Image (cartoon, rainbow over all chains, first blue to last red; front, side, top):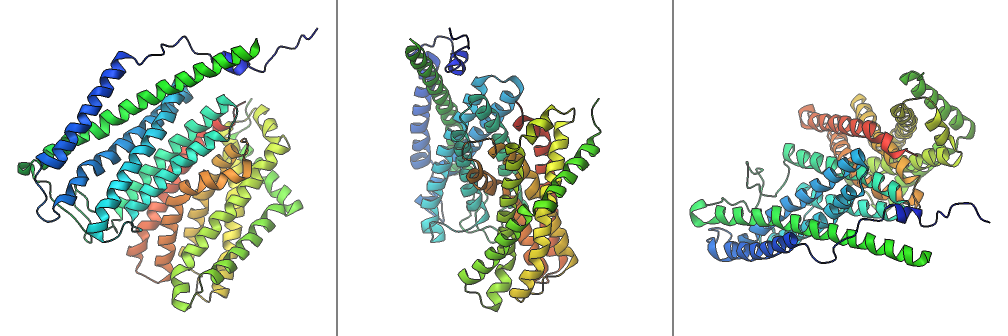
Length: 257
Length: 225
C-alpha cells in the first residue's frame, strides 16, 4: 500500500476558496453603473461644458482625460504596493489578488494616459513622441510593471510567486516616485506642468480658467478617472481572480476522482 | 547565539573573494564582456571625436550595468546550485547580513570592472577620463546597481527562467541610477562648473540610499523556505 500522502493537488486544495457567488455582487453592479455614467458625464464636461482653450483650441480638451488617467494609474499602482505590503504582513492570498489587479488596471490607465498624450503632442509639439524625461518616465513605468507580470509568470510555486511579486511591486513604486522626483527637481523637460510652475522651456502650457468651466471639467474627470474607474476595474479583476481560483479548485477535485 | 552582523558580512565577502581568486570565473567573464561592449559601441555608433566625447558616459554606464548583471547572475546562481544558500539560511545569522555580504562582493566586482573600464575607454576613445570625481560617481553608481541587483538576482535565481529574467526585472529599476550617473559623468567629462552636475551626484547618492534601505529590509522575504 502506498502510504506516502498524495501531494499532487495539495497546494490547490489548501487554497480552495470558500463557496463563491457566481453572480455579480449588487454593490459592484451599482459601482459599475455609476462609473459608466461618470465616464459619460466626464466626457460631456470635457467636450461640451468647458470652453475651448484660447491658445490651443479644441485639442486642449484631451487634457481632461490625460492627466486624471495618470493619477488613476498611479492610484492603481499604489493599490499594488498596499496589496504587496499587506500580503507580506498577513500572507493572505486576497492581498496578492489586489496587487495583481492593481498592476493590470494601472497598465491600462497608463496606456490611456500615453495615447492621449501622444495625440495631443502631435499638433502641439509636432511629434508623437520625444525623449523627454516625463515621457521616458511613463515608458519605464509601464515596462517595470510589465516586468512584474513576467516575473509572476516565471514562478510556478504559488506562495513564492506572491512573495516575490509583493517585493517587486514595492520596489517598482519606489522607482516611480524617485523618477517623478528627479523629473521635478531637474526640470529639463518640455512637458507643461498644470499644477506648480512649468519648466522654462515647456511647450504647450495653458492656464486652467475656472470661469470657463475648465476647473469643473477637470474636477469631474479626476473623480471619474482617478477614483471610480480604477476602483471598479480592480474590483472586477479581483472577482475574476476568485472565479479562476474556484474553477481551478473544481478542476483539481474532478481530476482527483 | 547569533554571530555578530559584521563578522557574517566579512566572512561571506572573504568566501566570495577566495572563490573568485581560485576560479577567476566571474571577473574574467565581466571584464571580457565589458571590453567587447566598448568595442561594439564604438563600431556601432561610428563615432567621430565630438560624438565620442558626448556619448562616452552613456556607453560606459550601459556597459557597467550589463556587466554587473552578468556578475550578479553568476554570483547568486552559484549559491543556489551548490546549496550554500540553504546552509546560510540554517546558520544562526541575521538575514540582512547575508544580503550585505553578498552585496559587498558584487559591489567589489562591479567596481573592479568599472575601474578597469575607465582607463581603457580613455585610451581607445581618446577622451581624458581620469578625475577624482569620476571615481566618486563610479563608486556610487556601482553601489546602487549592486544593492538592487543583489536582491533581484536572489529572486530570479529561484525562478524557472533564471538568468534570462534578471535583465528584464533589473534594467527598469536601474534607470534612476544610470540616468543620474550618466548626467554626472557627462558634466564632469565636459568640464562644466561643479554646480551643474553636483546635483546629479546628490540625486545618485539619494537613489542609492533609498534602494539600499528598501533592499536591506525586504531581503528576508526573498530567501524564505
